[in-house]
Image: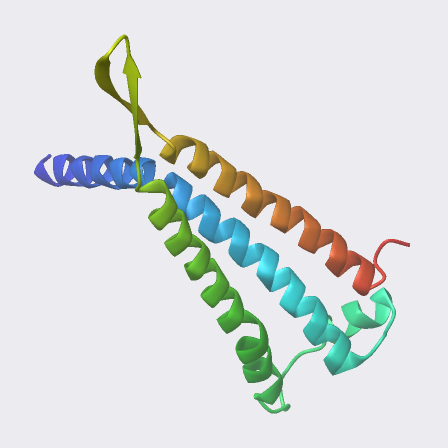
Length: 150
């Protein structure tokens, strides 16, 4: 019974953390997938040349047994690492932009008042929408480059 309480408490903590960081997670995943699609489509074209979608699927289904690890290492270096870099950079920009609230001083009938303009919510939504747009655009570019829109 005590272990169930501990597990339940851990689940609540995890859900609270996820709720506080949902925007960061969304920006990271969307940017990572979008940049991975762009880098991977470029890598496929430089590695295999301009091949048909059937040939691409054939090469992807072939087992890598007996072949060197250069292909896997090349894919990781050329695609995953830059994608992780851009996704991390996007999350850092998201955090920097959304953490700031702007003050606007105005006077109304000779009384000086301050108005807090809360930009973080707008910027969070805009950042997630921008990352989603980037994902849709990179999907379209990758499909066009690889000639998958036939």
